[in-house]
Length: 155
View 1: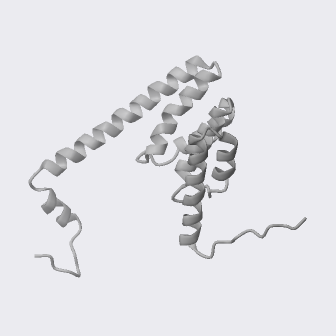
View 2: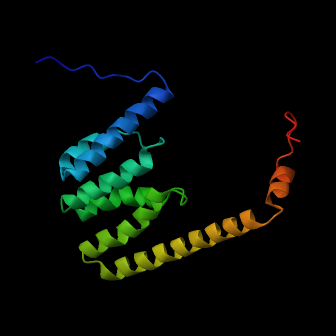
View 3: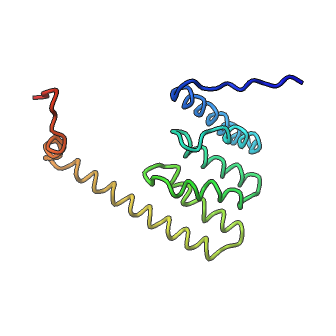
């Protein structure tokens, strides 16, 4: 039996492209309700890269589709500790209590839902503050004051 040669990406762009292709294949398998195939594609994605958050989210959903909520918790808990500005992180914070409820850990699930709700409220507050700042007539002046250019003169 001939051993397949594994393609090694030469640079970061190629690694990111490979990750995105595996992510697309993994989510396509999830949509076809083929969670085992999805897991095979998603596990090829680097844990630290531009596609890693979505891959962790999808890996958890594949485990849930296989009726393995305990296995879903592992990637989702890793994901929940990442940057909360990412939509996959916010979804994981809701998915964790869902998996806990499936495991019968109702008190932990309730606490998880309450914690997720608090996070969503905080994010909504930050969004409201951003919108209010952008509606302020002085937002551009404030932005320019924080970033005084030394090169190009825009005026």
